[in-house]
View 1: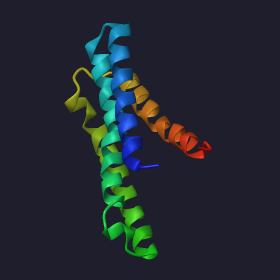
View 2: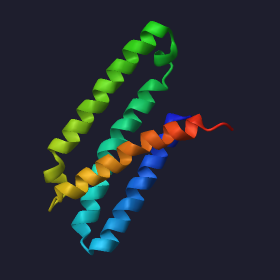
View 3: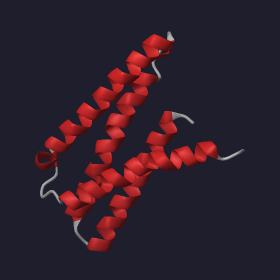
View 4: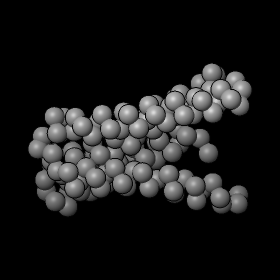
Length: 120
């Protein structure tokens, strides 16, 4: 399965859930917070996917392993940085909504694993 497909599904799920939260609660800040939480998964994931699909990452097994570790650190660092500045980006920030967006988009990885296991 392509990492780009997983990223696209994560982004789509994040947008849909944010729109639903906005409609259900009637509060725009809930939708924006949820969308930002989704972005804290999607943006770093896209950076890692880009790094892992580069020519350098597929040169040799040792290079691939080091590249994977490097991009995983970048992914974690960008996620943490986005969470640290969340209160400055989304105002007013609704932390529970942000965390729901983060968790929902993270769970898309598990759905992707289930897709991969299907005989087909």
